[in-house]
Image (cartoon, rainbow, N blue to C red; front, side, top):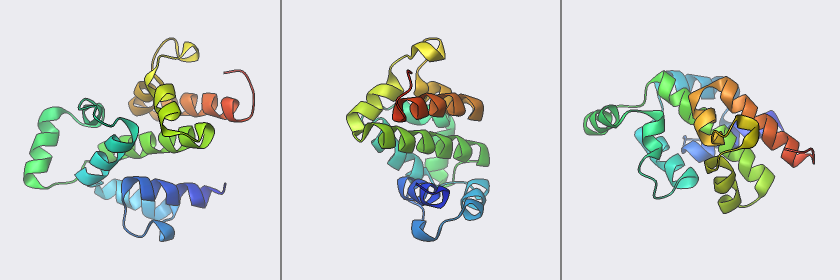
Length: 145
């Protein structure tokens, strides 16, 4: 899978306009300007359907309520967290080929992450997301994970 295709898949997951024409640069610009609240809602439905706590992993409840009321986008920082989470979700789907299995992987504590959930670690930092992606890569290519 090419990197460009991965960026386009992220655009689709986040509901960005014209995901087919999305590049790394244009995705970066979208993140800097702030993704819409609908992007958060969309990913929440994919990664954690019915889990009202998932959006609060990205943005605090009070801030989210205020942003919804004022129809304002996520901050650049929150948008980066959301895109990072979407990337890990995309990779989990690529490994498991099944949404339920991908969700189970992301939501269950993992021994290689010192008992933390892959989802929490991926949301927390880019280094955490890389650790999760490393495990997913090992699973995809047959190494013990």
